[in-house]
Image (tube, rainbow, N blue to C red; front, side):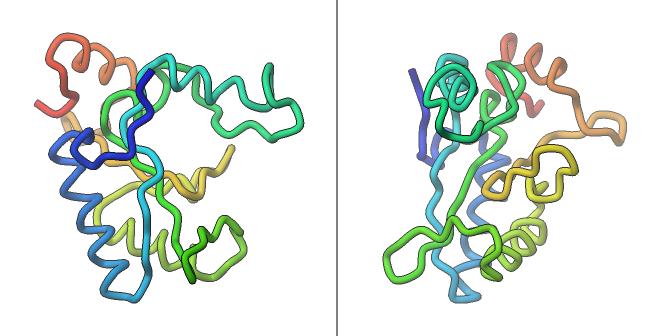
Length: 151
């Protein structure tokens, strides 16, 4: 199973956006750590099970099954700000508003903006085809045949 934190495991186009996000946050005095980049299908399904079939005391951590997450295609990353050496997971902390703003400024889509199941630490960068973002089905086809969703 692979649940990477390495920027090297992002598609190069996504790595550029992520590095810009990190740099913008650093310039604003915000320390971020990347908590997840590429996940294989087994790791995605393991996360999907949390709060559903395992660790029932927890809330679900993702709504995406294997193949339904941009993490599976090296096109997403999760972050958390660090203050005094500790991660800030409180979504009401105003620091998150700036992290989200800077991620969008860097070119990422922010999971915090999703109407159903907002995902605060999640950012993604996906390619467009004929002016529209590709679908997860198109991503899977490209990834399986080319090893990348960016062509």
